[in-house]
Image (tube, rainbow, N blue to C red; front, side, top):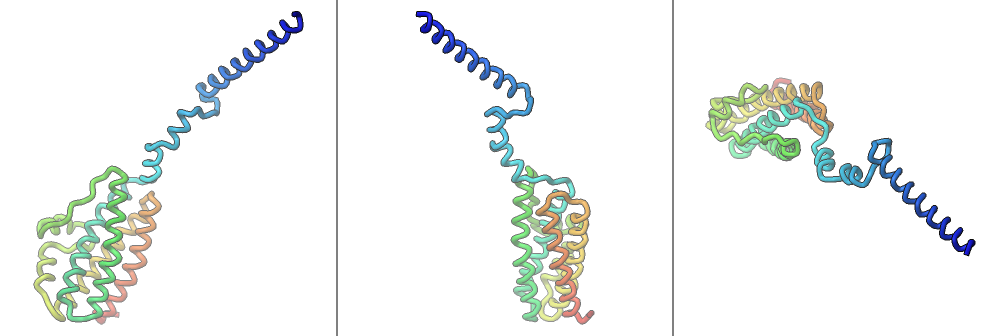
Length: 213
């Protein structure tokens, strides 16, 4: 009987000690002494954390760059589409196809960034007034400029398109350099790098086509 009582007592003490250890572990976790409870683990990997990672670390310069460059690219695409119909030179047509092919995907990319940041994507420019409102951006054509380009044809169109697109590209490079200096979101500053590289090369190409270099 004595041996049996001792065994029962040892078993009870073991259970009590195990329960106490569990309580202490829970208290340590709740006190923030270095552990993560299941709730915090779920929080770290939940939808909020995923959305934050997707949105990335960005600042106002990234938002401004994306919104303005979307509008800037859209006008370049409009000009390129006119060139596809009206240009007399195949070289101009090929350049226009290259511009549209590069800038359409970048518009989609920047729009996705704005959406992930909870920002509005700029509406499409629908007329001369919209072009005039946006012409304050570097290199943007006014509504009058776009009307003149639309009415031109042949060699006159080619010269006008190239002259305008050089100015347009110079504005894009200026905007991209601002993003390089002030932006925080890695993919946006990388896109700015790509704009500077690609459009600087196209400016040289267009100036050569205009006989300026």
